[in-house]
Image (tube, rainbow over all chains, first blue to last red; front, side):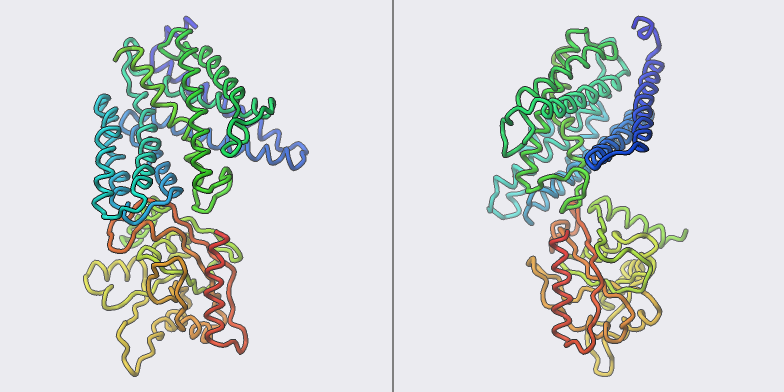
Length: 322
Length: 205
């Protein structure tokens, strides 16, 4: 690993992307080769699902690469669009009333661009308080001005929640890209990469563990697969992968282990919460097929990141006291 | 590419950015046959949504109906409806010697497809209002033209009455199987059947 450290920053980043795309290309080739074999219906369904997930990974990796190659402005813009689509999906699923129109316009066309502008300008203190303090106050004011008291708290809470998850949470991913850690300048891409890999590992391992262990679910009405043991397995796997990736981060091995566990655990819990939200909105299973609203499941894919990114970001900032 | 084409592409892009404008085709593939699409009407945005949900080749031959007095009033409105949408203008005040459907018949004789909202006006409740008889007359005069029902979902949330800026919310347009006028079918019976065909698509959506 010593020889890796001696490479220049851009060489290290280049190596990271070559490795990333190499791994995905290999997985795609393997999946392609597998598709020629005879298989029964269940296997085929599994293969199709895998192919779909792989496509999402491709898109994510390409997005990540473009974001890195094009510099901070474009990367912030790209994440801004992802945020926009996620919030669009969130608002579609929750029932808003006519009186919420202005508040929603504020959320989409003022709060979202402003938050990403703050990230782009690296105003990390302003970006941390903008939504929890100012927007939290502004949204109910605008909603109240619309003169409709019916289910007021519920409606405002929904909009606040959408903003908190889809805009505030998501905006921490480009913030990581732009964060200047001591002795770690211009290498934010590694942190985003670390976060995404660790969160994804936790998800996959939790899914596999819940199938293998067949534990009694903690909250059957919300998720049939979520159990504490599976969750713990996911977090532990995330910690191990985090440890293995410690050389890509500014962390020491033990720190990388803890950070991986934190990010993996919050990501999985975030997905669990989103499941509850989907049940509430009456969407049973939208993965893979377009549902009532035409929602394509982007929110599904980014939700764990939306929850894990702020916790991870602030853990890092707090730990390095910057 | 000329300016109207570019403006049209930009408009379709914005409509998709804001609403997704997903078209789902059940029972009738998106083919370049001569068709009359008829749909529920809840918002000014309805036409743009159907138009954006159509494949690009079909957009060029599918025309909306526009009220002549409103949509020719300013040069901009006139340009948008004439150059981008190629709208069929109808006058709202009835003159005695004129058939109000004549401009629509003319367009159909030219081989164009139309989008019509047979309720006549925008509804506020979930249920579409009873259909006006224009659809029946067109079906009688042009039996070879396919009548495709369409259900537009969620659009009233995008732009409620009185607002000008649309909120980004995903919408879908569901296109159903063609409804054909049966021999000797009564006017009212046909219109109710067509309306039920539109409402039935809500369940499919």
